Image (cartoon, rainbow, N blue to C red; front, side, top):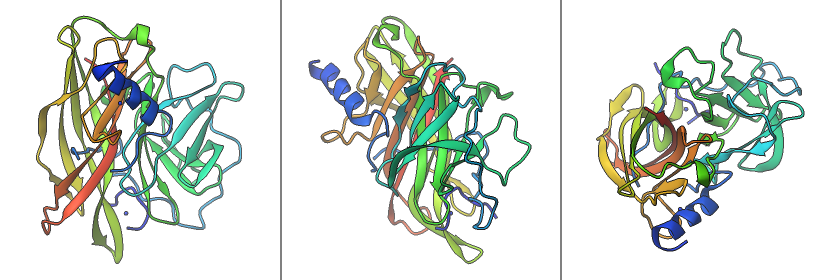
Length: 313
């Protein structure tokens, strides 16, 4: 029986102006909760349930694993995500003097180091962490050292996270934001990657309720000459097993050449999809998306949200 990752129940003038608003609204901790579909990455899948209470207390010394492959100076990473179960997501920063990654999460705005989960062993590269207060687990899905080209990223990562002793959690994509001077101005570029998330839909397994997860693939294409962009993705819903949801093909995004961000139109700043380039030359990108769907079990309307990362082909 599959276990999913969450403990019990498992946006200048014109378009450029709107893109600037996206950058202001979604920076740091990602966008607010809330339609387009979401997907879970080809890393460890399904995500493991958090360790039960009574497992070893993590060390207070932060991990020095290279969660972002190319980082050497202290900074707060750009972040994207949609969170149907919580009010916001993770904010991740890097402290160069110690080599530690610091995290804040909904309900705690004091940065704390990530430490290796003491209940896990033998990972290479390491991907299972907990926040130092031991309230939140964090599972990274990519690494510059990954032997799998699908999950080998230098400037970005995607983390699935949740609370150890309560419901809630999500997926946050984060990385080194591309400066405006690094955004391509001409040509056509395609990025492929994966996304991961969670939904409001629940299923029961072994006497407990779990929130359904999502996984899948994502492709984002930019035509810099035409000032256009589109996204395609194929979501799968993780209940007791995975079930495909309707794929989305070539959904238009709002994009202006030279701006390091993109989005799907929505009301106010509540964009269903938003994202930005990462890396000095826009080698990768991160994004967040949300959508509603009809449950394949009973037809009820459910909300899904998550994050994605992709890299240039």
